Length: 406
Ligand SMILES: *[C@@H]1O[C@H](CO)[C@@H](O)[C@H](O)[C@H]1NC(C)=O
Image (cartoon, rainbow, N blue to C red):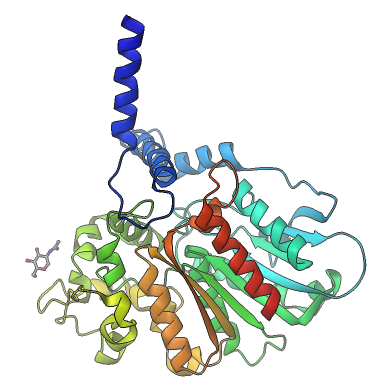
C-alpha cells in the first residue's frame, strides 16, 4: 500500500514536471513535452553545477549530450564514414561506397546555439548518413569550435575555413565531388553559419568554385529584435524559449550575460540608438517583410527610449557575419539559390521568413518550406527514440529538395 501511494505521488510529480500547456496545432504535444522535460532537467542540473562552481553549465550539458549521443564513425554497407579535418577544422565525412563517378557534395553545420552539440552526435550522424545514402552524395559535417571557449568570430572563421577547403580543387578531386553541384547547409546556429558563409563566398571573386545551393533549416539570423511576431508568439514554446535564445546570442558574441534583460526588452535597438540607421532597421522590419498571415495581431516593440550604447559595446550585434539578415541587397543577390525551412512554433520563424523575402527581393530563387505544426529543432528528432512525425516530414522534404535541385 505504502509503495502504491509512493508510486502515485511520484507519478503525479513526474506528470506535473513534464506537463506544459502547448499551443494547439503543434505536432505530437506529448513527445514535445517529454523532450522539453529532458532538456529542462539537464539545464537545471547544469545550472546547479555551475552555481556550485563544479564546472561551466555549457561544459556539463555538452558532456551529458556527448555521453548519451556521441557515436563512433562507423562505416556501413552503403556509406563510408570517417573523422577527419577540413581546412584544419574537425569534420566527419560521409562518402557513398563504391564507384568512382563524380558525386554531389554538401557541407553541413550542426545547430546548438554555437555552444552545444556536434556532428558526431547520433542524430546528426544519422541525418548525414541518410543524406549521403539517399542523395548518393559526399556530406561533410563540420565540428567548428564552440562557446564559451570560442566566441564570435571563431565559429564563423572555422565554418569559412572548412568551406574554402571543401571548395578547393584538392578536396573536390580527392572525394570525387562535382564542382558544379555543391551545397552549403545547416540548422539553427548552423544555418546562421551557412548563410554567413554563402554571403562571404558568393561575393569573393577569388573563389572559382561556387556553391550551387544554400539550404537553411530554421536559421537564426539577427539579434536586434527579440520581439518579432514569432518571438512573441512562441516565447514559451519548448525547446527554444526566448530567453534561452538571447543567452545563446550573448554567449556567442562574447558579451556580458547581464545584458539579458536589456536585450529581452529590445532596449539595445530602441530609437535612441544612433548606431542603428533607418536602412538597417528596414532590413528586419517584419511589419513589411512578413506575409500578413504570419503577422497576425502582433505589434512591434520599438521603444523611443532604451539603453543606447550597447551596440557600441557589442559591435558584433551589427556584424553581418554574425547577423546575416543585416546584409546589403547586393551581397544577398550574389548568394546561391536557396531553401529556407521554417516552423510555426519557433521563435526563429520570422528570422527565416524575413531572410527568404530579402533573398527574393535581391533576385535569388528561394523555396520556402513552412511546417505549420513544426517546432524548433524538429528535424533533428526524426529518428528513434524521439522520432517525431514533423521531424520525419521535414527531413524528407529537405532531402527531396536537395535531390531535385543539387
Ligand atoms: C530599458 O530602458 C528604459 C529607458 O531607458 C529603462 O527605464 C529600463 O530600465 C531599461 N530596461 C532594462 C531591462 O534595462
